[in-house]
Image (cartoon, rainbow, N blue to C red; front, side, top):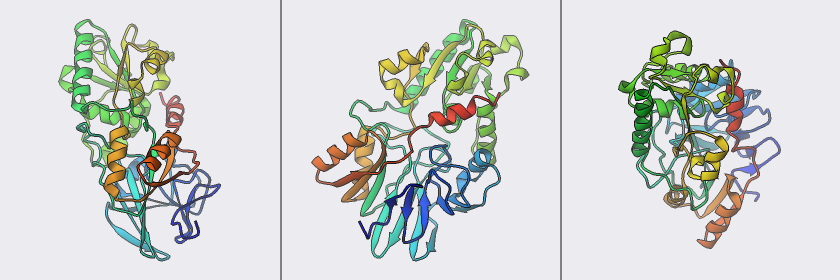
Length: 342
């Protein structure tokens, strides 16, 4: 529509009134970035705007970029568009983008975490609903089957698995994406059980988190720990290590994968791991419903995930709903980049 604050273009989602893009996937002059996962933050833009807590992770991933940062809730006026960033609860620095122009308010969520189940994530502030007329939402886990457990319960299961393996003299290889999920895991497990070893890709992001003031437990590289201690260790690594020479250094380690996709038995079988822990930094089905309702929006646009299912449900509830075709949603790109870092 002519008066829409965000439209879809070949380069990405575009605000014509402010002449900038949100998470564009092709190079542009001005890019507002919701978070540093590689499906949302691409190299090659002339200028970047992002939430201040994301500065270290963005520079760790993208290098020497021209970056302007905003504190959460800070407002700037750009060509008559009032723009501010608000916590999304997904990863360090993740933000929703609030746009206000001509009496209309739109919010682009990026990726966010919301759930009826209690959250336990000390790496970033929780999602804050932002009132708006139109809400642009993700739908990564937009099916009724996806309903998370309390995250503390999941961490208790991980600790029990690690403790049992250590008692048997086996390392515990816990796989999750090197940016975001790995740090969430590190802040949730009990470090008194044994030493924690991390893959090089995880350590790169750990440095960025520590630089941003996020407290993480003591971690070691595999070459810095003796063989006896290694058998007691929790080893946090990206999924790309499966079948690699690096993985073979841990012998008969018990392996596990932490992801919302572990909700499905078929996904666990395809990963061929000993354990699957259902731990996600995305909204589940009830969380998506609650987040949308809390915005007060009457119009909702879905960007990625189970778009058709979510759009149909929204229309059944009386919302004006549609979808944008984007290149978001493939965090496996992060996994590919992680593979060469150790």
